[in-house]
Length: 100
Image 1 (cartoon, one colour):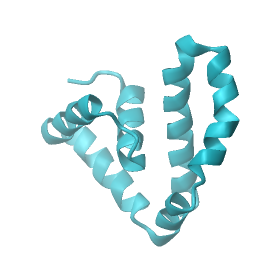
Image 2 (image 1 turned 90 degrees about the vertical axis):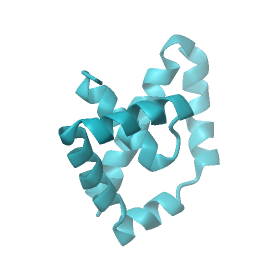
Image 3 (image 1 turned 30 degrees about the horizontal axis):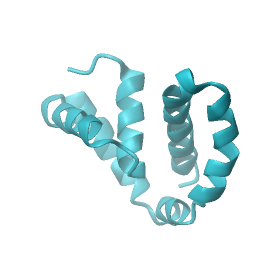
Image 4 (image 1 turned 60 degrees about the horizontal axis):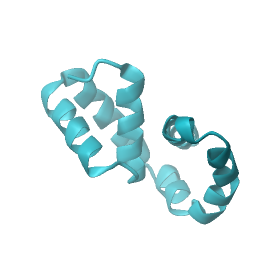
């Protein structure tokens, strides 16, 4: 069972963005299948991200430009890079949902 709600949210957003690792995908898939509250949140996010505006925004993201903006920050703090990327992915997903 995944206990940390922030971690669950981050994994769900990574899954939607297509940036989730195989191992983390297995973890969140199990949580979706076995925990009704996680399944509900997944269905809710998936429905919002399936809307035309959200799809268009996802399709028009320039990952290369985003990487150029983020890379210098990652080089400064390598120990917190993964946490930073998760927060960034979550923030991006929130923005996508907000512009539905």
